[in-house]
Image (cartoon, rainbow, N blue to C red; front, side, top):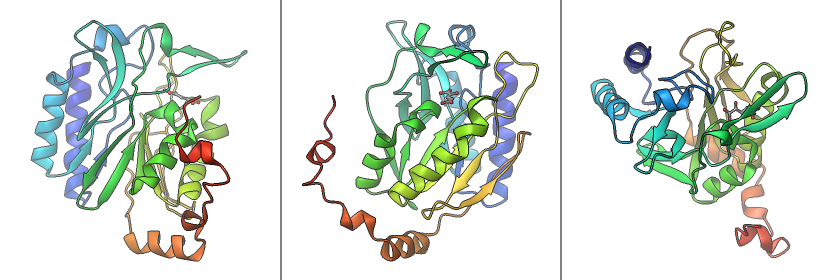
Length: 257
Ligand SMILES: O=C(O)CCC(=O)C(=O)O
């Protein structure tokens, strides 16, 4: 299954590149099944076999590749949900929720959280990373934007309960608050799986408009990042220059608790 998932990723990365994509993102847990019962079985070291395969396919396709995420096992045996290509981002906020009658999921039963923010530089601008549940925490995108990121990318797998409620809303919120692009990449929906993903990989522009999206089947979603659009939005509604950190010093200081 893992080998097949990696081969499938390679096929799609090459196809995306062939159609002109320059930055490509894979879904959350793209090489494994998603569920606390599966992470240990699929986990591997970073760097490891999957990250090597990602490097190879990025080179072959000649793209910047955001490697979705994979279950990672570190040297001490701890497990993480990790995006491991270009930059290593370990999911900071573990997905622990309990909506009675709908969904209970406790990543923290088996995973440990990452403890640092991640961004990387490309020739198209600086890009920030988060994984799925991380998108619910506006601080990541806010800090990324303040560090000059033009986009946030979130590999993610929302579900049938929270997907319709919040998936698009959160992307548009992160985009409009920070006047950046936001892109998400979800696994396709498998109704026979133990975790049924919402799908709907999407891209949102800095004005908060959805510029590309899809339903729940396997596909590739394409969008253009336009530096002019960033300037236009930031000049028209200049909130990025109008912040008054002296009025909210806690935010300015990046206060923890
Ligand atoms: O925040 C949600 O509703 C879903 C999050 C999730 O599926 C994840 O973090 O993997």
